Length: 604
Ligand code: M6R
View 1 (cartoon, helix red, strand yellow):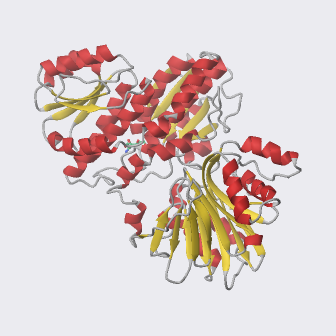
View 2 (cartoon, rainbow, N blue to C red):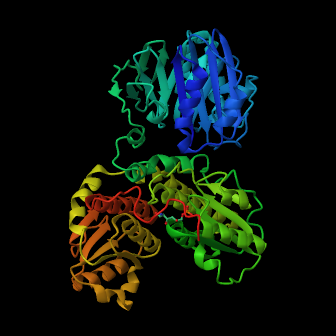
View 3 (cartoon, protein in one colour):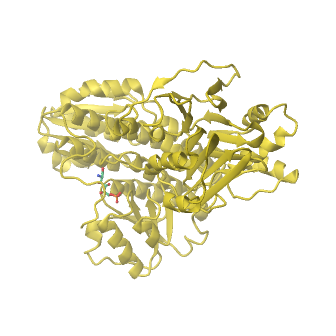
């Protein structure tokens, strides 16, 4: 997703900004830009695509002496990836870069346009710089105008703004998106949306908190909180090791990615939720014309997301839905009809079996779509339509945040389709949208539960295997829980629908068989409970995950009293991810790079 850098000092500013952006490349982006203010004169460079294009555009620019600069890599949310939509956005005399979303930008834009202000881009960000300049006309100082701007914008943001009347100064603010200020012994000041951009340049940093804003100029930083009180500057030392700094204090990338799910889900939802409908800017309105069936196709974790979707599409959108494992689909001479939308799901967009299945569907003349995390990947380039999941780069081989964002997109898509096909009332869709809005909070890791899982993990290191069981969407979640555990702990684990146990698998039940039972309050609670009791009666060791106490369990992980089964789904997903990670850590395994596995499987 988007990245921000900023610099105040005397070194070659262009290089510092572009080097900083390069450190944020791993987050993914589709355009980039920098704005530099030197001796009262602004220079602006923007380019679509990779940073090399930006370097080419700025190749003749040289600076000497003191300057101020801001830079940005953009992953398109509002408006296509074009130069006009790339940051920094400009007013008459000011430039801004922004991560996040300005929720009330439409109403502010209408007001500003009414005052004769001309907008160049389709972004929400541009409203910030025009609002600032509009308020500057009556404000005592540029900083006052900046404060008034913050008071009027709503949403999530990390902002850097420079104005020619306040030369040598960067105004900054953070609310819901990360922002870090760093400094070094050479009297230079740096900004970054992740400390990855600051390593090797600063020896100490301040991690801004929500509501923090202020200004920085050569050697001086003024920081204020939400109540406009000046805040003492608390610097912490910055690690010099790039890899460990990118892990931001977490033991493994997988752990960081589990903790990041709250933020990335906000990104996934961004701009896609309206009051009573779902909006996908990237979809043509005619996409579903003539479509009576959906066929989902994927591998591994993405296949599990597809299975979840099959429940949601039939339940919400009342459309026939089937799910295919890509490596099977390719060779089984499938019967395909032209009223089928063929949807592939892939984190990487490069998985060979899924890519070949997509090619096959195209050859049959089907309409195709991909749900993917990597823009410009082979599948995104090939499919007729694509929806990006916006999880940011996932480094852990065991997929976590990619799965969370896939399920989130598929849930939204089921509602989008329900709206098109009028299979849910607008009040039902509205209710589902309220649930979607609470996803970021739902997946935020509960410290007490993480600690409980850390302690519990020592009891689940041996035995002859694990059953993960659940019903409805909790069945694919059980499959995903088992896959996670297998991948990183190398222990044998299987996922089953809980009603299926008595048809054979229960023969394995004994105290050395660990059952991880997903027992949501709002989905077939009594049915699942009976299935778990059957296993408990045969002495399997039971670990139940449920908001309701369960006296037949040996261990119980108590989840929140969520109001809907989909929120229970997401909370239990986090529990399963943490459980497998803690078991694997105790076993001394390399959680991020488990044996025999590759992140992107480009061979069949
Ligand atoms: O990039 P894709 O989503 O197409 O990858 C599919 C599988 O290879 C992938 O999900 C794999 O199962 C992960 N290692 C799961 O953690």
